Image (cartoon, rainbow, N blue to C red; front, side):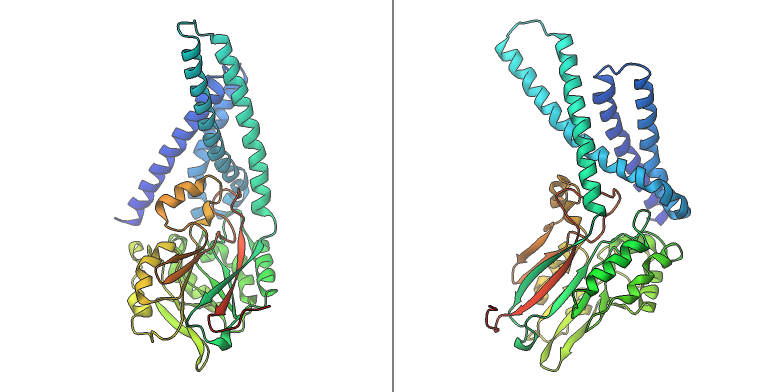
Length: 398
């Protein structure tokens, strides 16, 4: 399937879903509440414009990023609010359905009061709209505020005692693009460097746009500093944005791009392997030589050495575990980003956020450092992760 056909299918799906969501919002908040004119006309016009604006924004971001940056904030924020409205309206429908069922059972044969039904619909609609507005404000503040540092100790059985306490600062899913720019990157670089990490790992989905459009915004990444280096692996969004060009650009900035390969961290016996693979989706985008290749990265390694794997998608751990990895660092899920979307993410990804174990391997899934789409986070705060590697042979710290 060509990129054009894939993009057309994607837009078709987006338009269909957005149309359905906005119809549902109109039905519950405008039609069922009997919103009077001219407010009904204003609401309908606004819903149509907002529903059409999101797919248009996708096109603008590819072709006219300067325009996309101007319209991005209101449209992407509305996209998040749309999700919250849908969830809350669905909950209100359940409440209303249970109330109607109770009324039918208790007042069997009674005439249904239309005015009372309309009043209840208006009360629920008002409560939903108010709640969605409040949650949107909370979520926007959480997404645009300072990114927290999350410290995660991980015990690795093969880690040399001399490396006990070595730290890896993980940055993931920044999504530099329409609503995330240079100032955000500068802040992330400052916060990360303040941790004095031994290794910095960027686990994909760094950008949403071309090098030509985002070169200035990502330039501060050249200031990242770590004792053993800064490393990067591609995410699926790099392949939407031109992965080969971004690999060249990040290399120019002094970042080592691990492409189905590994490097040694440390010296002599006091060392471990750091491996990185392309995103699993890379082979589908027609870029020669791209795509996850675990045998190439891990197949001939010394099994007595500890290995930390950088792989954007958590599901890579199912194949990586048979290569006896100690730890996989991933992102991709954003921790769900806007609750309760994490429940849907769990249907597609085995691990949504935090430290988990799969067989003999451990995996840590970052909730992401930025956000994608809506500048909103609800019950899934962004993070810079400070992974502290502990040797099983080291004495417990006081």
